[in-house]
Length: 206
Image 1 (tube, rainbow, N blue to C red):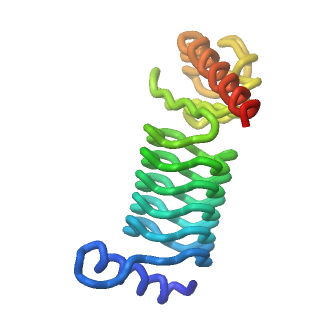
Image 2 (cartoon, one colour):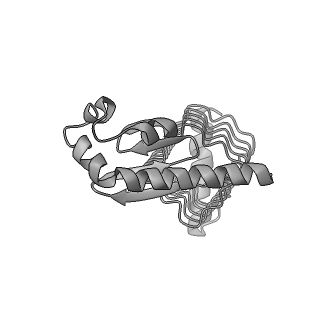
Image 3 (cartoon, rainbow, N blue to C red):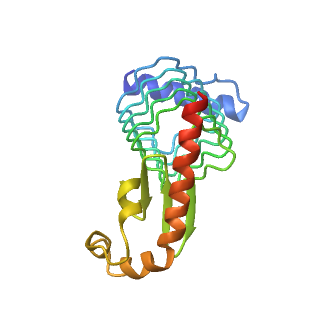
């Protein structure tokens, strides 16, 4: 979709949201690859199956939007409002969801591989596999079944489980990392083991 047509759709959607006529953004299957939708108000929009790969949606309002089956790979969704959005089966691989609001979002069947969920709000989100978000000790922690992020450091769970406060890998992360890991490392490891066990159980049941 060209930029001019997209502006027309957004303008009509804004009128629809304000109750001044217009029309809801209805863009199923639309080609929006690389589109600049920063801070766009797409509340309640239909983007079912749309290609939003590499799109900039920083700060966009996508609350209650239908993004079922949408391609959001490499999309920038930092600070985006996705509360109540339908992301069932969406491809969010490598997407930036830092600080995004995913409360009550439907993420069943969504591909979250290598997605950045740092500081994302996942409260009451519907997920196939467990994800643990914690904030203590000054660094945000996000644990998935395969990888864990502590601050800006993302590594495989097996690595985090093997490291101690004396490990060179920990010491090289930050000047305070060794002390932090000495205090919080066992709690993080316990959470990692819990998430991995729940994920394994979910896979067996499926």
